[in-house]
Amino acid sequence: MQYLDTLNEEIRKYFQILSNEFPEFLNDYINTEEMKKQSKISVSCGTIYSKMYNKIWYSSLDHSVAVALIIWNFTKNRKQTLSGLFHDIATPVFKHTIDFMNKDYEKQESTEELTTKIISKSKKIMDLLNRDGISIDEISNYHIYPIADNDTPRLSSDRLEYTFSNGLGAVEKIWNLEDINEIYRDIRIFKNEDGIEELGFKNKEIAEKFVYTMSKLSQMYIRENTVYSVQFLADIIKKMSEKNIINIDDLYSLSEKEIIEKIENCNYDNIAECFNIWRNATKVNTSDTLPINKYFVSIEKTKIRYINPLVQYNGGCERIYNISESAKQDIEKILNYKTAKYTYLDFQF
Image 1 (cartoon, one colour):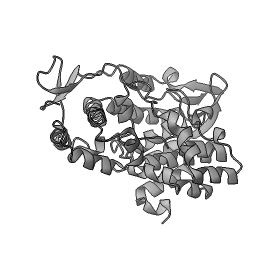
Image 2 (cartoon, helix red, strand yellow; image 1 turned 60 degrees about the vertical axis):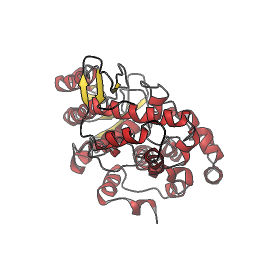
Image 3 (cartoon, one colour; image 1 turned 30 degrees about the vertical axis):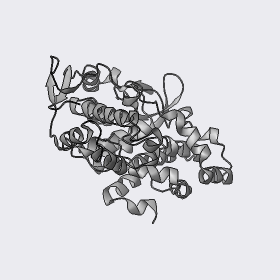
Image 4 (cartoon, rainbow, N blue to C red; image 1 turned 120 degrees about the vertical axis):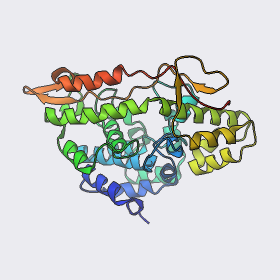
C-alpha cells in the first residue's frame, strides 16, 4: 500500500492543495523504515492521549511529507524537497516532550543533531541518495534552505505547514480546506530585508487572516494544559529511563503505542496510576501560589511560536506587523501571553 492510500480524504485534499502533483521520487524515501517510523509518532507531543484534548491523528510523517510538498510547490528542487522530508527524521516519541526532558524549553532543537547520523546509518536511504546523485550534506540540514526553514518569526515551509495542519485539527479545528486554499494561493517567494528568499503574501487582507488564526494557535501551544502535559510526560520518561525501564534507544525505535504500554505496565513508583489520572483529566488546575502535595509545573519561559510574514507593499515588501493594526494586535497577544504561575493535577508524583 502506498503512503497516500493510508490518509483520510481530508488530509489527501489538503496535500493536493499544497502541491498539484505528488512527486514520485518521494515515495521511495517515504517507504524507508526510518521514515515509516515517523508515522507512529503524533505531532501533538503526546497530548493527544489525554481527554483534555480533541485532536485528529496527524503524524510526524504526515507533517514531514506536507513540508516537502510545500517546498516542491515553490522550488521544484529535489534536494530542498528531500531536506524538508527528512527534517524530523530524528524525532523521538512524544516529539518535543523529549526537548522538555532535556531542559530545552526555548529552542526545542535538542534532538536535531541526530538527523545526519540516522540518515547515514540507513543503507536504503543512502542507496537512494547515491542513485539520485545527492550527497548527505545536501539534504541532512534543512536550515541551509530559507524556503524550507528560517528563524522565527519569518515564514518558512515548516512553519507554514504546522500552522495549516494544527488549525485543521492537529491542535484544534479553527479553519477548513477552503480557508487554507485561499491563504496558500496568495503566497509567493519574495526577498526579505536581508536579501534572502522568504515566503510571503501578495495581499494584506489574506496575511491578516493568516496571522489571526496563527495567533490563536500560538497561544494554544503555551497554554497551561499543554505545557503541563508535555512536562509531565517528560518527567515520566525521565523516571523510567533512570530506572532502566526504558532507554534512549527505545524513544527512537519504538512507537508511541509501545511506550504507552510500558508506562501502563510500569510498577515503579506510582507512574502508571498518575498517567491514568492525567489521561482521564479534562482540565488542569491553576494557582498563583505554590500547590502543596501536588505534582505541579511552573515553566517561566518556553518557545513562543509565531509568524510575522512579509506582505507585498508599495512596490516592495513589508512585515505585516508594521502595516496592519489588527495583525500587530494579534502578534502582541502572543508576545504578551501569560499563563498561571503554577499548573497542577490532584496527585503526587
